[in-house]
Image 1 (tube, one colour):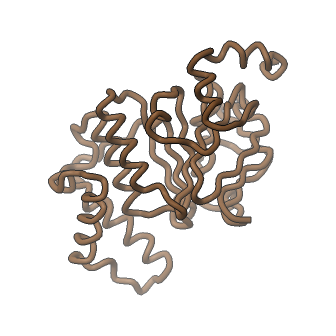
Image 2 (image 1 turned 180 degrees about the horizontal axis):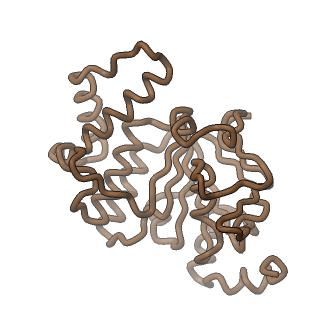
Length: 257
């Protein structure tokens, strides 16, 4: 069983059940958009996939290439090949983006081989330059402190650069479009599209159709009150854009009970 497979997932946060039986599968090479109104559980799903300790899985399973993620710590999940881009990336003053990325790469290497002395600096610089050129990121970006003083668009571009450098198999993008103006949105979307391919599966969490104008999803899912209640193709996102979520609320009133 390859890819990310979520089966009957129930999650409790602060003694409140947020997810109530989510089923979802994301394979490498696919882009899935997960949409839903505020409070439906989208970010809860993202944090549960990565193993945030405040999110208690009470039932169900999260499998990655057949491995039970619930038995693994967040860093172990990352080393397996899962990446989470945060809705609100944290600033780390004093740590340059380049040093952060090199440390992350070395952590992965040493997890596979405790004798590994780390990626040589010339090799790392070559990799980073290639990724920055691919994403059309100015090379000076690497010397800035991670997210410190970054604009909203710069923070999201830094997240995409991290994704490009770490080369995950599955990337979860938690409202990457949040707070971006149209130019920053287009830039971030172009970065995701540049990385898109048979080796990368993407779960793109968003409220709005607008980012899907730039990143064409293969599948669209609607999460409502802790359950995925509708799935379809890109046309489903267009329906939400035209009609909003009222038709979902009316159709699935029993889910809200």
